Image 1 (tube, protein in one colour):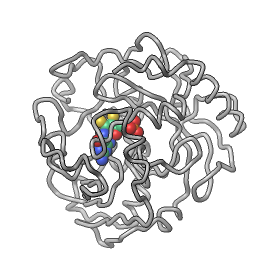
Image 2 (cartoon, helix red, strand yellow):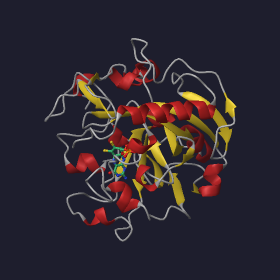
Image 3 (cartoon, protein in one colour):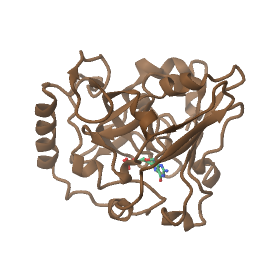
Amino acid sequence: MDTSEITPENVYLSRREFLKGIGIASTSAIILAACKGQGTPVTSIPSTPTGTVADDGEKEPLTSFEAITNYNNYYEFSTDKEAVARLSKDFPISPWKIEVGGLVNKPKTFDLDDLNKFSIQERVYRLRCVEAWSMVIPWMGFPLAELLNEVEPTSAAKFVRFETLYDPNKMPGQNNSWYEWPYVEGLRLDEAMNDLTLLATGLYGKNLLPQSGAPARLVVPWKYGFKSIKAIVKIDLVEEMPTSLWMAAAPNEYGFYANVNPDVSHPRWSQATERRIGETGRRKTLMFNGYADEVAHLYSGMDLSANY
Ligand code: MTE
């Protein structure tokens, strides 16, 4: 796929505009601003040490809104990244319900009003796709832990299983019988509870568009992008490790953990470097996508070379 038409100027201009809009001068923070409900951030809060500053201290510019919303992986609509925006344009995202249940004391179905009651934060994260391209995205959302705490997982709950809507009339890619629909993903409960794990409802200060996984999608920035499941309708707390759509489709290529790791190649390509959308050349891929300080402890004692 050739994305050379996405110009660096575009990226630069969008970044300037965005930074001007929220009144700060740096993209270094993962938490740039916080506000109640969705929409424009109202309060700037101090930056935290992680985010879009690489290990060498280099500032990484935001990917443009145009690129983030026109270069998408969303197989429910198309396997052509540049066709997803057009094909998902009329996908109905309201009303919407997310049913949260399984091993919990207080199962609850969240509608859009319920989701809007969470305090929305803005966080800039790298997104590293398993296909070796990446972006820097200013998400709006709230820690998934807040929603999970509301339903009170029982002590038997060890994993969280997420499911995308299944409706082949609205998502024509689901007629493709190569895959076991609906799209399913999973996290270990401690991964799901980690503060970096977001339920995202927007980006660049606006509600998500359909192609980005509206109305609500997961964002797990230290894992390959396929873990960040879109258009979630069901979240279940479970005892056993869930089988994801990708584990079922190609178990020798896509594992459950899927932590970004430059030292472990995909069977068909290296993961050592990545193409940042909007830039020429390649960047070195960082262990845990640059979030090792926040998440490496989750995997102490695990053999990371077998962790794909
Ligand atoms: N979620 C669903 N339901 N369907 C998908 O095809 N693709 C995944 C993930 N979530 C996908 C999905 C992959 S492979 C990636 S890299 C990211 O979404 C891409 O997110 P983006 O299109 O917002 O960049």
